[in-house]
Image 1: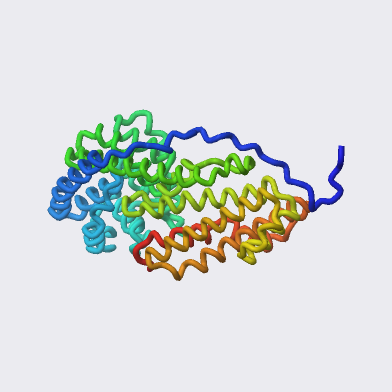
Image 2: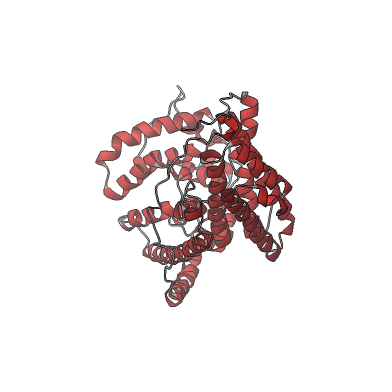
Length: 412
């Protein structure tokens, strides 16, 4: 058997990825326009009633509880203006002097999550002379636990609150009533601030339905809204799946991953609201695109082949494609196709300024993946600073942000 005489011609150990567990489930999903229109009309009718309810809530505690419920049910995007107006009116001094633990923690968390300035000093009144929190009721402890997760690094009082309430809630969980127990269990597993909003909303709809104090109007609206969004997600996922299938890369590049559904879920986690359809699909497409590049460098290419691809991406011309191995020609044509799609979308949405940035992030990513391959195959240990600078690119944060710019109506 012939041996590889040169390291630059050796291939990295290839990972054989499992086929997608979803197969062709979403390729031809049916979309019922009449059903979707029915949900939209039901949402519009109930939305006005809930808006009236929101405006009729006059005391800060009631307002904050209603806002929190809307957010947990995945309905807050329908009332952004009203919610912001109410939060603007909630003063730091009010939470500091006039509220119990539950209300203070709830107000603190809501204000922080909506990027309002508020000091953790509002919690000083709930610690004893030794600087230790005292036990309260479950609702208050749960509210404090969730507020503690929007802390900054130097806020010692909230770190102590997180540790204290976690122990308290874990100890009390088994004895709680169903709907409170479910909320505590979910919070201990996924604190609200770290959860995926629409995934949490699906979970909370079931929890809220068991709550004796539930508002049936909110529950009804939440169910219509979730069904509307779920239908929209299926439609988008079907579109992304057909887009991916048209390139037929899995048969042409067997070393790469087929993870359409998983990629799309990232988009849903980032922005679940219906108006961000392009952003969700854009994230799914760019993750699949990054996966092809990453698997080409990490999972198959030799150092020599990787350098050829990197040089071709840097030059960004079609003239050099004949110098590439056959499988890399497929990769390179895919890269150019993605860029051309992006170019059209950016122009259509009036975001042509982002086109050169997107191209640059693709080139940066190729160079960074190539550098990683050289380190790995050459058994080289880079300095921490070199590794950190390269990882800043391979974290794909720059290309991800560039990819979704066309989907936003305005940029701050």
